[in-house]
Length: 258
Ligand code: DAK
Image 1 (cartoon, rainbow, N blue to C red):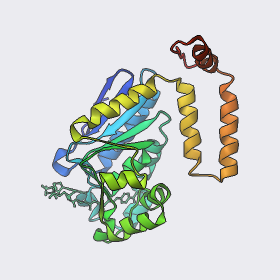
Image 2: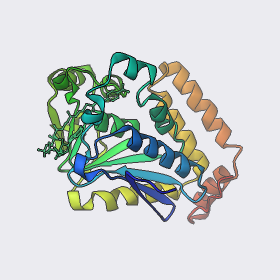
Image 3: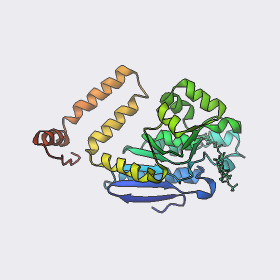
Image 4: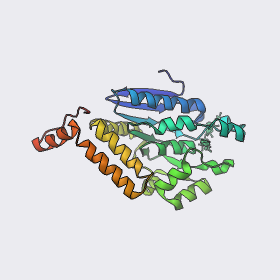
């Protein structure tokens, strides 16, 4: 599919989706968010793709929702159209692993988009923030919820109430990002991580993703039960036999997603 606001490339079973509105620092307008949801769904359906990287430009992952598009909206517009809501649900519904590779600004909806991916790696230039408070609004794509879960209430309140930006080192310390790379190496490193995941059994990757996300949505007891059931289910797969057999034979496993 051809996109106006994205550049999509696929290599070695990994889709690289680059947000591409350079004149607006990749501000998220409704077209871009719809296209991103389409691209992720397309990648999810494509058997050749096993992992996905979402990135922006060197200067900005995304500087937030498009303020120029939002400025004139009324309560009725935002509420009745469920602004971004349906597309964002499609984005978070992606079943394959999605890595956010953040360079430069990840602000407002941009930070929320990064947090909606499975994990975030960033460049040493990254700046995360929820500056909506400066515009007389609050985060609207899960920022208050995901940030609080990921970095704790104290830092989340600090970010959301002051609108200050967090640099890469603080983001890593806080647990918002998993790894930091020099800016020039960010995308190659993110792709290398995605390729590493792409080598695993698709079945255990998808089960692992579902289980980790459950941790944010259920009690510990329920989450552990979900994990236990998923763990047991994987013993019905050929890939479990192959993975353990390969270990005992001292060879690399050949997973077949069965
Ligand atoms: N929207 C629209 N255009 C933006 C933009 C944005 N968020 N951010 C930057 N731009 C545009 C600028 O207007 C400028 O365009 P021209 O004026 O040249 O036409 C161009 O990008 C370059 O920006 P600057 O000239 O400002 O570049 P600087 O390097 O000087 O500054 C900056 C970079 C990132 C610090 C600055 O651009 C900035 O502060 N941007 C705004 C950041 C921000 O406030 N972000 C939060 C937006 S509110 C919801 C879901 C989500 C949301 C709301 C509701 N629902 C589901 C209900 C989310 C809300 C937000 O994200």
